[in-house]
Length: 112
Length: 468
Image 1 (spheres, each protein chain N blue to C red):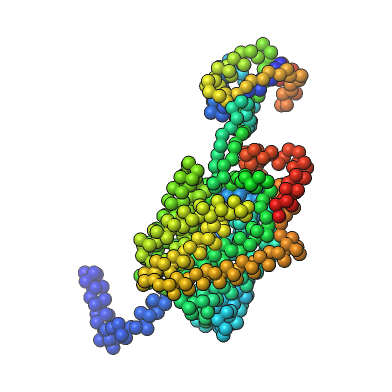
Image 2 (spheres, rainbow over the protein chains, first blue to last red; image 1 turned 90 degrees about the vertical axis):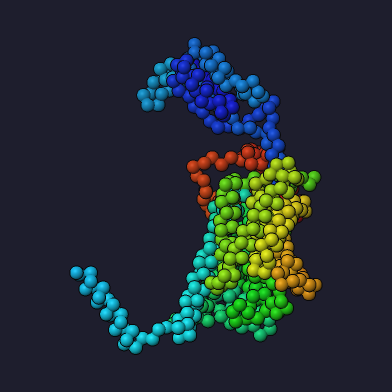
């Protein structure tokens, strides 16, 4: 099992969700995060004082899938989240030690 | 058939009535009744206006909440609730008497405490007048809440609320407005013009706010050692804007209501009030646009309020064109003033000192300059005298009061409490329990308060000590 963590631009969420559904991914978790890579942030102004906002809002998607599906998921996210402009995000793949479905107690492959 | 009988009966009855001795009424025979209608109208207008001014408390609460952080929202609500409630009681007990009681010296009143001028069955005008005046006193009191936001000990603020409503506000008020009831003030006897209170209400609040902000010191993280200003973002600009609209609405009670009479004068006062607010907002917006490259919402909102404050003194005695000019100048002044106070490191989260203190002074001066009946050096001189007298009474008294509070029960919360948020530390609550309050977005490049808090608190305590 692999966990795919993807940091994407927030407005891309629907595209990514649709793309994942198309390849048969049955569930995901998202969180609202802030971050920056090489994008850095921008300057804003509040009551006459300028300040730098480094952290840009992003959406983080967590998906746990069978290892055989892993690279398809990465490709699907990569394509659907892409804009070509700086700040598109990153995808990480991590191995998962165990998974449990709380309702039934199933574990392993049956849990995802 | 039935219709004919009924109308016939009606005609018969009215003819009998007239024939029975009721003379045709004239204005002269009815003058008491007519005067009574006017009196009733005066009551209605004064009390409706009082209700509008009361609603400004909601406006102040929303402006302050919008321009400050979410972790202090409960504290802002409590301060606004209490400066009105405790202020009302203090003004009932002591303040009204000092402001409007019989004044032998012209410096303060000595009668009318606990509304002793009213006894059941007696003339209730004093009640209507008191109601109108108490919401004015409460307006002055709540101005300070914004300038002292996010770091003031609640118990200290309660003491301030009582002192300002019982003593500081009414004593100056007696100098300028005492004769509106039973008093007499030395300043008004010189011809001082302050129709609805640019000085009496707004500058009093503004200078007390200045004293408070100075004694308190700036919020942690607001100013860097090398003189840069690090904005502390308000958590809800829509609330702030709502607050300004509510204040604008309430001002239609504040200014026209000060006639305390239902007559045609209120029309021009309404128009002047609106034009000054609009001009203030527009000019503040353009000023911010030129200075910062984009039209900024905080400054524009402050601009509307600045125009309103400035027109409050001259609203009954200037032309609508003058009102536009007065408001426009206030809109420019307020932007420059906000930047100025940040430059001298007086931290005012909502701009109360600039909006109410500085623009209150401008409006009072403008009342002399733009006086419809003509102006001269004496008129302007009396206005300047009033502006100065207000500052010299309010600022030192408020400063001393805040210092005493600081040295006894404490005026400012500890750095740890300030970082955690007053909602929890002062009130044991959370204004937004369903929301994850974000710290990372609000302070720009200042490290999130959640991380390595002890190191930060240590640094900040040292930095705060250096700044005082």
